Length: 314
Ligand SMILES: [Zn+2]
View 1: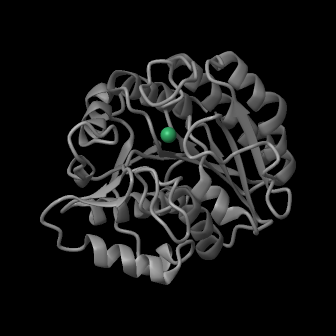
View 2 (view 1 turned 45 degrees about the vertical axis):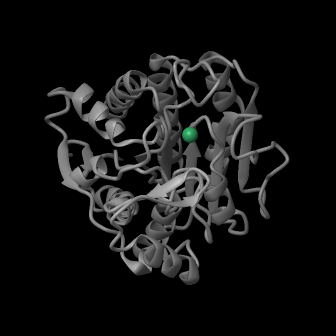
C-alpha cells in the first residue's frame, strides 16, 4: 500500500480574517512549520474545489447561491455571521476545504492511500445546510460523507468529532438520515450550545458526550472507549471520518477542556482500532481525517503531528 495522503492547498494560508480573530492564516503556517520534513514520505495532494453538486449533497441551493453572491470578487472582509468572515480568498479556500474532504474519500476508496488527512481551513462542522456559522462556510465532513455514499455507493458513514465545540452543522445534516452516524465529545456549556446527551437524531444515529469544563484527556478518552466508540462499532459504517479539532487541548484559548498533545495520539489510535474492528467484522471500513479547530498555534502544530503519527502507525 502507498503512503498516507496529506491534502493541502496554499490558499489555506490566504483566507483572511479580522485582526485578533482566532481562525487565522497562521494556523496553516504553524501546521506546515511543525510538520517540517518528518512527513515528507506522505503523498501530497492539492485540495481541489468542491463542485456545486458536492455542495448540494448537504447545503440548500439558496444558501449556496447566497454564499457565492456574498463572497465572490470581494475586495475587503465582510461578516457572514457574528464570527464568520470572508475576504478575497475565502470562497476559494472554503471550496477547497470541502473538495479536499471529498478527495480524501476518493483516495482511500481507490486504495491509493491507506488513510488521508486534509489540513485545509476553514473548519466545517458548524456550517448548517442553510447557514454559515462559527468560522465555517461549508460542512466539509458531512459533504464528504454524502459524497462517499453517492459516488462510492457506501451504505453507512460515521463522523467522529473530538473538537472542543459541538459540530451542530454535521448533526443537523445527519439528523434525519439513519445511514449517517455522528459521535462527538465536546465541552458543555460552550458555543454553539447544542450537543446535549438527549440529542440522539431521528433514528438514534447521533451520539453526544458533553464534557464539563476542565475534563481531562484521560476522562474524555474513557468516554470514547466506553460509549462513543462502541456505538460506532454497533453501527458498522463503511467509512469513518474524523472531525479532528485540536481546541480541546489544555492550552487552547477558546476551550476549557484539558487534553494533552499525547492524548490526541491515543484517541486517534483508539479510533483506528475501532475502524479495524469493524473492518474485521464486515470485510471493509476505511478512515480519513479532516482538520477542524485548534487555536493555540504551538498546541495545534504539535497535536496535528501527534495525530498524523498515530494515523500512520495504524
Ligand atoms: Zn472548535
